[in-house]
Length: 214
Image 1: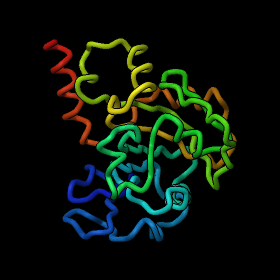
Image 2: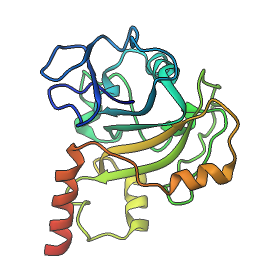
Image 3: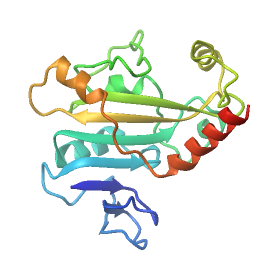
């Protein structure tokens, strides 16, 4: 089963839609801060697009998503990048997301070779969470003018470290781990192309247009 959490009125095609408001197309009306009324080990793919910044307790919600997911289920999260003024000043955002986030979602971190680096968390130890999400892919979406082909990847890495307002959103694909799994299998899974939110189609189209134009 594929599940779209916080789908609103634009549920992903072919997904079971979950939202706290009974928008058209929503299949289950619930508050994910409380629970998700589905059995254990139900979901094989979970989409959580632009919804997790609003939850009250990210660890509790991720534990609930973990509960309903099968072993090796894939969870796609699209979220605002923490180091952007428009996001950091948003009073409705309760959770923050950046390159460090994947380190807090597992006690056995895996760095995919084809993904941007999730740096080691400095100074403060990462407590083991009550679940195990291994990173398969992470992608940064740069905001204007950094979304143009004016910068090399290395330049963007430096820019986003030194200043805010370089990255607008971040997307992760995680796999849910409930049994033993090898590094080789994780690496193989990280090279698969997984579904992503339909909102990104327009962003990618515009990015390609700017790249071709400039």
